[in-house]
Figure 1 (spheres, rainbow over the protein chains, first blue to last red):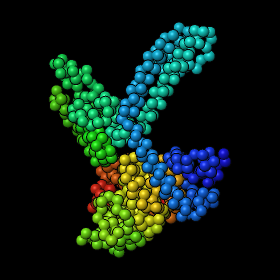
Figure 2: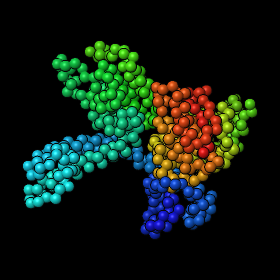
Figure 3: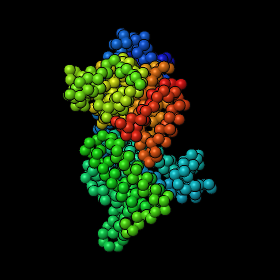
Figure 4: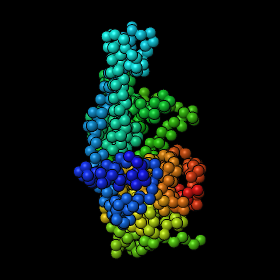
Length: 297
Length: 212
């Protein structure tokens, strides 16, 4: 395909679409949603030149019709990406990762008995998969390593999907927690609505149920954090302040989940407040102030 | 100090017993109206605040505008009322739903569900050499967004930017954040005027700039 200027515009290819019997509105929607080019051009003039529109006014009328329809349809599509799909994706990602690691161990053990330089882990499996096998046993070991590589790739693809679908499902939660942690919290709670209905103290220890029940039966101290430990605000806060950090983060994550479920719009103040609160907590380390260990004990 | 003229299509009018900034068009967010004119609340709109505070935006009405961070269309609907073709970029689906409703009755307002940090994803729709870019995106890297979108702006065009200090760094002093943002902007733009918008928007800096 020659890339003349007009070909790069959203209106290009309309004649071909019509000839192919595609719905012109749907085709335009797809091009507006997925098209890309580095450099903007004088699209109104090019559209008139290429015969797409009769005049600049006619072009703008068509652009208005197309962008309104395209944006409305894309909004609807994004909103349909729901919390249950997110839960499937995050669980599938975890399964792929766990299975890939397990199989990688098996593949490495086997490969180690056949080849001199077999390394453990996914990277080791990748090296084995790239080998040219000799004989039936090597063929099986290399084939097993190929499955590992395939599973690891599927895990990465699922992570990318989660990155894409978590923000429309829960914009505030995904921004605050990151798409992956947001998906995990939703999965642990069983959905966005159940998460939105949980008190902050429960959100704080989601994923630490074993430790929580050990505590409730009197065998252990109360857990400071569950899965939210993976968040930078908790993990990279000094240990004596982690309880405060986890409590502050859980509080705002709970509010974020509620705004996402009940209002569905981005709420900037929520993010500002958390940033400020975290700055205060982390400033304790610089001031040499005591942490909150005694509060949590 | 003489105040720069408002663009044609933006007027101070008597609405509900008060003199208020207003544009002519169909109401969008329940704003008060009179005789077809809708009050433009400077507390809900950075650009409205910039007009109210008398920044010289260089807008005279009828311009082609690229609006980044259109949200639910509050401000961009007013822009489309007095400007020419107006491209409205918004990344989040929920507010974009309202934006589409605001765009529907305005035949020169084009809503786009796009990420302003990735101009290559809408350069096939938004035309080159727009007269003005209005930017109100509440994400980190606001100066970077302005730099990346400079490709759309005519050589003598205007960037009208509201920098939100807290989006860059909620803990640093706003003044330091603004300095940093302006330094980065100067790589792509010549800064014509800056003014704090605090009377209407806390910790925001209004910036008028033109490509270098």
